[in-house]
Image (cartoon, rainbow, N blue to C red):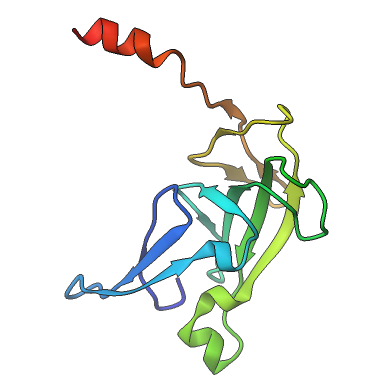
Length: 141
């Protein structure tokens, strides 16, 4: 992203690394920018100018002080750096575009990927079902 290389999964911590040596250069916690973020999609999308789009799941207060304690989806983007500080840390350009309440008010869906058109962000809300763990262990033995 804008000359930086990051390893990321569904957790909100991204690891910057050197692409030649694979040495870890640092860690960035998206929770410092997006309040109470818990999960992000594993596959962000990019525009031709490098703008990165992603979706996170978060709890607690949103950027407007609403949804206290309730899950929400946060659609965010990171736009191209404009200053020297932003070139060193592109995450400074993170912008929350929208926050949406899940269709199941007190739960979230599995976040892995999403889609975009020129005018829309499309997030398939797939239930995050754990099931009965004791049944899983019964089937293994």
